[in-house]
Length: 338
Image 1: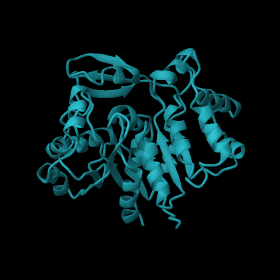
Image 2: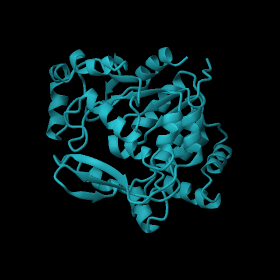
Image 3: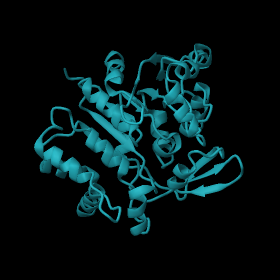
Image 4: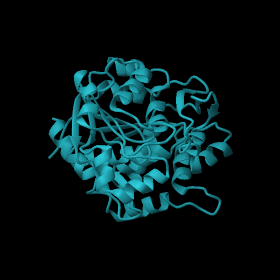
């Protein structure tokens, strides 16, 4: 079954690829996956540092692009060989996939659309949409905290994920323009999905380039927020559904930044009872399950936001972590997206 809806996702990390895979499972083949390009941590940070911050981060971009390979294609020998190669990291912590992508960006003068077409020819496939960087101009995030400290770089966001020094404000270290493709993807979307992930690093940072909030204001899309499953101590500790709304209102500049809120169907207290060992593991990391009672969700319903409580997670066999389940999310999107 083919669904002709135009879907735009905003986010990166592991959350957005999960959403993309769930959408592809519903038959959707026109997905625009927008991701931030300001990451300064890990292998991406090392590459950007080597280039003296003259290049964008492509980690989330490449993850989203690989997620756009349909299940019917991702078992092809050449696809398997490429993804294995793209995931290889050498002894100097250089990732081969990022290196290849950067080389193609240089070959095509930063035209990421041509890079994607090149990879389609190389692999003999057709991606189920387009992976889009929110900007092609190099920038880094900066943020201030409730204790009055200022930090620069997403690596600091990650480094302090267990800190009680809660983030108060985020901005870019220089003004940059959004890519025309990102703006167009927002304007043409029938549905716009904010993916789960680092609330500031993967989601909010996408609203900061010039042109994005204006596009969101003009967009006629049904906007959907898929909530995170667990908190970050310095970002979403004791976050309520209303906190989500207020944060998105602040950075999208919209009174109603989303009209659908998808969250787990159990509260934090019920999760703690059902999964005591897993809850204790997360608690040792200063993290907790993000699930709410009907009473806690009522402020969203009162504002005419459709709250969908559903079974949306599974538990990994490795280390017993909880993750959004693409098959379960696909069932929700199947009913929602016409």
